[in-house]
Length: 404
Picture 1 (cartoon, rainbow, N blue to C red):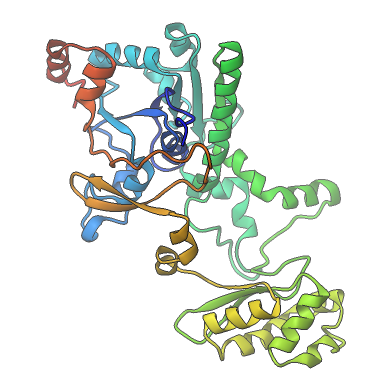
Picture 2 (cartoon, rainbow, N blue to C red):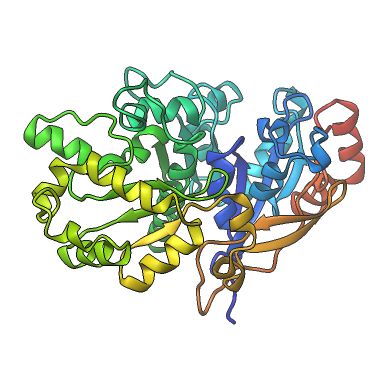
């Protein structure tokens, strides 16, 4: 094992909720030192979101917060307090990277926009991640990932054609945008390594997430076709869907992309005649009669458990997989083998299960897991050990209400 690839990179992190912390988590996992700035007067919303330990809410009891922030140093600093200014200035000079996910006016109101930070640290890289970016006629539109998913266009495409838009699960753009955030930061770090120059990165979470909608955008641009809700069906393949199984709310996903796969499906389900049925014998026929085919296939799956259906179809060469729930994923043998889940400690929660990196780098793997911070847990370490404040100065900062 060689040295962590991001060891020595200092990140001043003003990210909050999910899309931002999920991105900076990758940097921490590969060796960067992150100082996460929070305030007791305005705690991170993620601390208020479930799941909570033993079902009891509290700012130190959120499993979501723990999963997104383990390994980060936590500094409890009231940035709106004028006495916090010397701390902010030293943090900016210390940082290689500054990240924030406030609305466009947030950092400027603190005197912490890129131009101000660049005066203190000319080589600094700053990334702003918000719903709609910092520039443009709708840049001031603030919101979370649930709104971002609708703004990006997912709502119109997710759901059933005869029902109102359902949208994807949860704050969907919060799961997509972090990947683009990390790529942008790594590119900026590489540019700075070669040139010594920092830069500003303006990332729109909604715009970044539209990468997932490429086919729909191209279909309209090229063909003038406006895609809409189609349930689980596909414009290209049939069958293509999720089918009920024997058991409480159990399902199996099945798709046939080739003639051989459909012939195998017909044989495996005991319906060899489907392969020669004029309604289903051709690709176009299956698309035209997909509702009938789905109903027949659903009758077959309903008599079997999801595991039985999955095993039988996979053995026959048909793409199929049971629909997994949280309990399935927590004990999934593939995820367990890859070390997807790990354990970290927390002063209030005790031992917490978290997700590790999604990547397995052979020479530079993820650094060992570290604890999930409580609010202000590392304030003394950051102020004294990293920024060089004396004990008397720290006492004054606490007395002034800058350090909480």
